[in-house]
Image (cartoon, rainbow, N blue to C red; front, side):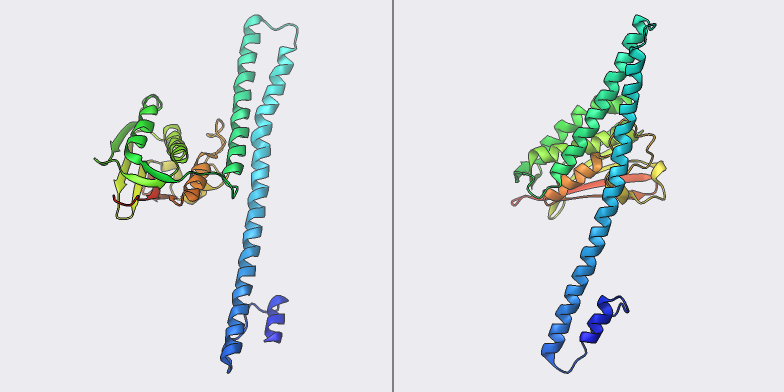
Length: 274
């Protein structure tokens, strides 16, 4: 057992300790050592994955923050010129304001995600009626959908489906999903709230031809965008924030492609008595 463990630890072999021994107690010990070795390997893989994500996040943060800062600095230099007209001055000031708002939005989202993913992020889980809440949120996006020519097909249950969740977190999740839909979708969008045996599911379906053949789970990765150019006015953190909030509430947020259609599904635990 000692020699096998030494060979495994030194990377000579990937084979763990042979548990086919004659002593049941030694077999149990070997099994526990192998289990501990598995945990160590998983922890190391997780550490490397986090490091890679951090490096990628740092690179993306640097790019996303530097772009509006560079633009702001450039327009401030133009404002300092002596020969600009009043009209040009107003135009440059408007651009600086827009870039500043963009930078503020980025920093707010970066901060919010870091807070949400902390272990002590506060949530108040209580029995919550989803039907009325989601109906109110969808109405708030009427103008955004109308501007994009989106026709939402909304299907809600007759009763007020209840779940165990945090109201402010649910509202943020649904708002982020609908904002993402309003930004990238077109044509018909299906919004369904359905009661299952043990869960209440919110499903949003829209055309997403540009995602064909891609791994839609990457949509929940920090700072990932299928097309960074089209996301110039977003941080790319809307869906990751929504997923983190769902995880904190004990629910799930998943994505899948059905042909050319993207399907986002939120699942909350159904409240007792439903």
